[in-house]
Image 1 (tube, rainbow, N blue to C red):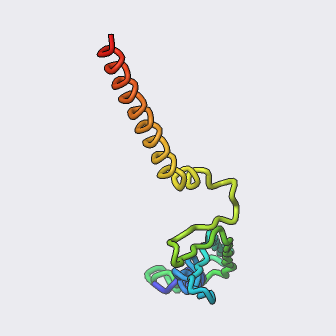
Image 2: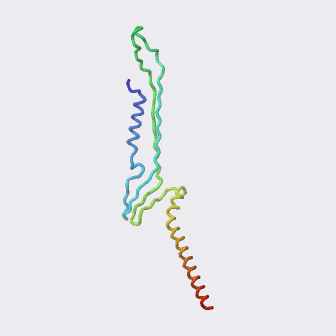
Image 3: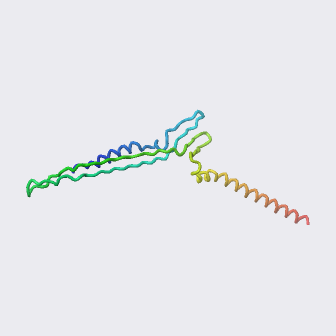
Length: 151
């Protein structure tokens, strides 16, 4: 059986989409700054694809005689395909001598990442508070012991 015309449309569209899909589409090419830092663009990519077609009715198949098989008749075909791509930069990944940093373009939507960035500092402050309280308590106990000895 011969390929249907819609198969050709789908194949061409899918091959073109494959060519567009590349890791450099999402993580951009590195750009080196004069201070030695490297900046990479991080993008959100969306693809859309549609294809469709229709065969239009033709004349009924003709028979040569009662014993002959029906001849195949090609029906007229109409179809089309289309696609779209949306590429939106969402952040920059900065790799420098001070470490790796993610700079988001939309600061409001990245609350969780901000919390994760602040977590180590917060835990360190809490630990310092507990150490300070423990130190004050032990000094208070030592003072009470000294006061009890004086009586």
